[in-house]
Image 1 (spheres, rainbow, N blue to C red):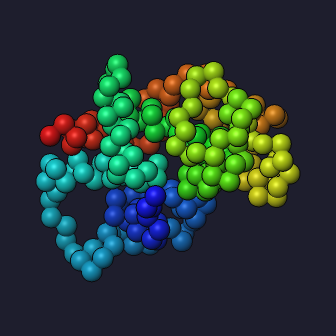
Image 2: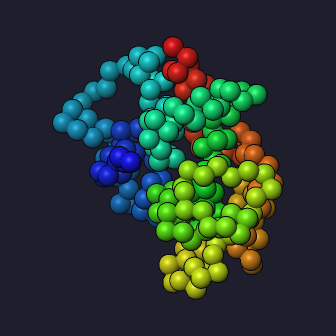
Length: 209
């Protein structure tokens, strides 16, 4: 499947804010958004024109896509899934994106970024209810238990990342045991559990046209 392989810092600059796609680097003075706070490209530093209504909605959709690292076709499928569920479509959409296994691994502190978490899932480092799952887009459900595999716990990579993220607090919809490195999905994520600055109603407006 095709996936963006360019410089991810360009994505942050295009959206005009940090998307935290490079983990620790985003918190340092090397962050591209801090150093060059204008869009990439030949005319990026020119005076920006006022964005149209469509442009504002499009940027919000692109921002959400890039936060979670999903393709346009995936994002559209998630939107249709959200629209068919009971409740508010925009909140349903964010809840679905949060439920991806790669995002769960990131939220639990097993990776410094969602991109890194996606790679770790693909390499088979996690189990769900005791069975290996190597599909980053797997959507976890209430009652399921996500565990870092026994054979992965002694790897220097995981030891360093877990130590670095020791102060990170897991969202309340995940009951995480730091001693056993297991997390139980208590419920589906609610809007107040998602701390990303996304105006999901703009995405709904965009797809509703």
